[in-house]
Length: 373
Image (cartoon, rainbow, N blue to C red):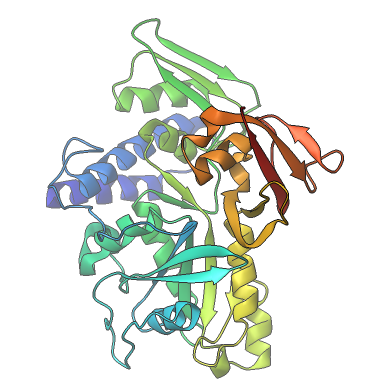
C-alpha cells in the first residue's frame, strides 16, 4: 500500500507543478486517469472494483427499513447522537468525550406519514477513506443512504466541512451532483467512437478521451458526450462505481453563536442551522429532508369508502412513479390482476380520471385500483 501511496503523491506533485492550458490538457487527463486508478486500488485492493480483503470496505450490517434512509456523518462530538435521540426517540449514548458511538445506531421517525430510517454513524476523522478510525465502514454505510446529513459543530472551524467532503469524494461519493450525461458502451471491435453533442469547454477532447481509455486498457468503445463535462467526470463514468447522493449540512449547537455569526453561515448553500439539545429549528430540518428525498404521498381509496389519509404509500418523484410502481409497493402480484385505476389529484385532468398502469402520479394523489373481473 505504501508503494501505491508513494505513486499517488508523485502524480499529485506533478499535477501541482503543471500549468493548466490547452497544450497540457492531454497530459493532465492522463495523470488524472492514473491517479483515479491508483486511488481505486488503494481503497479496494489490487485489481480494482471488487478486489481486496473480504471486509475491507464492508459497512455496518443494518437492515434497510422504512421508505427512505438518511445517514448522520460528521466528526466526533458534534451532536449526532443527540440529534438521533431528538428526531427518533432511539437512545444513542451521548457524552462529553469523543468517539462515544462506536457502531451504527439505527432509529426510525415518522413525518407526513413516511417512515424515515436515520443512521447514527461513528465519528469520522481525516484519513477515513484510507481506513483510519473505522472510516471505510462508516463511509460504506453512508453510500447506501438516500440522503447524507453532514453534522457540523457551529463553534468549530468551517474547514471541517471541506475535510469531510474530501473523505466522501475519495470513497466515490459525489456530493449534490447528478451523473454526467455520457453514453459509454464497451465494444468487441471497431476502435474508439467519439462524439460531442455539446461543445466541450472544460478540458475534454478526442485526444484526452483516448489517453484516459488507454490508461484503463479500453481499446474499443462508443463515447457520446451529451453535456459539457470535466475529465474527472469522464473518469467517474469509466469507473462506473460512483454514488451520487444529495447532502445537507446541519450546523448544530447554534445556541453558542451570535446573530452576526449566524448571518455569515446563512450565506452557505444547502445548510440548516439547528440546536438538537434545545430542539431549535427541527421543523425546517424535517422539511428539507422531505424535499431532498423527493418523497410523494399517494393515498389509497377502497371502493365505496373514503381515502386512507393516515397511512399513505410513499414513492420517490425522481423516478417519475407510475401506477405500476404504486401497485408493486402494495403487493408484487397486484399488477397481474390490474385492470385500470381511478385517480383524483394534481396528476388527473378531471376528477376522477380513469388511468392505465403507465400514468405518472404526483404528490397527494388519491388512487383506487380496479382488478380484472
